[in-house]
Image 1: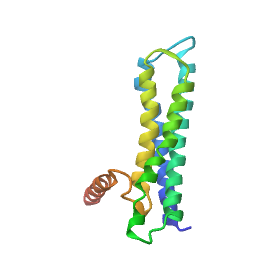
Image 2: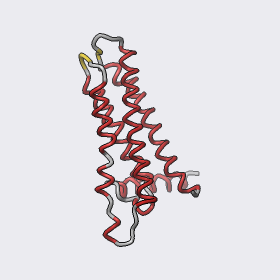
Image 3: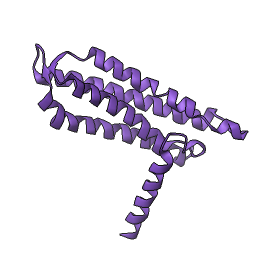
Image 4: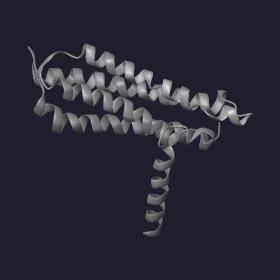
Length: 166
């Protein structure tokens, strides 16, 4: 396997770690102030929240790496009509979506602020999968994720501006 082929999965892993970090920031500044657990201490509830949040992000990483592997190794483009695999990309959203549902179901009950935790679960898992695949899909499928063309355009603009400033 070439070095270039390893860069994209490594980038997906970095995005997953970035979302774990963002989840911990959100926990610190948003969730601690809005959630009121029932029958347990806030720190115990936050440990539960961290665990399930990481499960959602891990499921998005699995879905992203599965997308990468299938797009790189299994999907063949021998005809123009075979190039559109968006239906499969969208169907892989099921993994982080199911993980979010499991997290919402198994998180200990709260008296107030459950919607904040549930939103954090959904946003972190689904956005992680989206950014992993939008930024690091294989070349033949790099514009398959919805909005990837616009996202990559702004990435190029930012890269050019940063190079000019050096």
